[in-house]
Image (cartoon, rainbow, N blue to C red; front, side, top):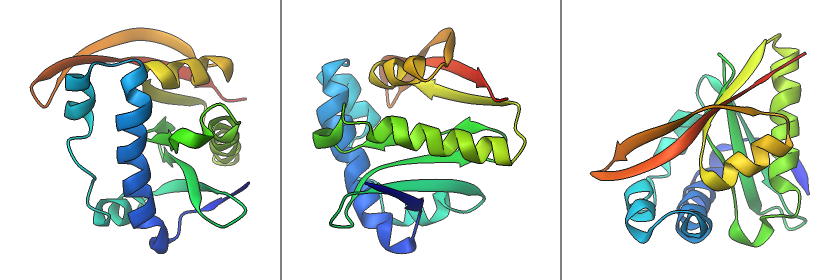
Length: 155
């Protein structure tokens, strides 16, 4: 596995990866209605081109060069996305992406990382030293769901 910077040619694969991850992995912790509200359809790949502007986007690729995960870091230390293909969950891809994000945050002299994590992502972030501040109960596309506000100081 290699972690590299986002390339425009990744956009379609990442949109598919996001939708597949939410639908297959999200269903482990959320109801079918919540999963459908979270990702009603595959996002437009153009949204990934816009996402790459003004933030660092890291892409994990397998030996064949296929994206198997990605994560991003906004300039204020907020992690907006961290998603992995379902077939690589539990293999270290998410943790490696977190490590790359943390290294970038240190280089940028950020004091803290923040994230709104799903149930599954919460477990990963806790293993990486993030602490839950609060559970967020929210309405998403007309469906009640939740995530967790988490943070980690960067030294």
